[in-house]
Length: 234
Image (cartoon, rainbow, N blue to C red; front, side, top):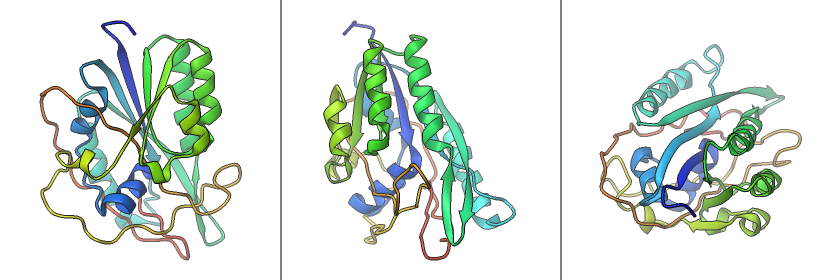
């Protein structure tokens, strides 16, 4: 790899939120510090965060809480937010467009030479073929996830793996409180072509980072649950 290796980070927001709740019992993550630890002494190009936009009419309170959380994300240097939509299919809340946006950016930026290496923060096996396509273009892809939530196919195709655990996040929380104790048990259904059921939680990584400016982020919110299938969203 070149000495001035450029790294772009792609975060599956819902996936990361559920993984943190399941494995750490909390999700008040300092995204700036998290990115710096993943990148280490390499050059950070940009952080891309993907999630759904809450419906202001159907979920007014959740929408307001999300706006506060997104405002804190916008204050993180070099972080961009990409938002898909959500729709109810019967009693189930279905994400629309989030995976497609992430995969499209991952591929397009590789072809454009925007980055040398990508760090994909998810354990979702649906991204396996996109990762292989990026590798075929001459770029490198690392995956960051909790081992228990990492797809075998995605782990095998990645050039490098960052296996996340509680210790990794020890200095990366916004507040110093202990775990909330309750880990998310069920996941959002991602619709046809997605998980085919409740979404598995996921995560990944472990590298050292240089001392840099700390960017503070408000604690992610957990919006009201839809009927039958809980859907907390970062």
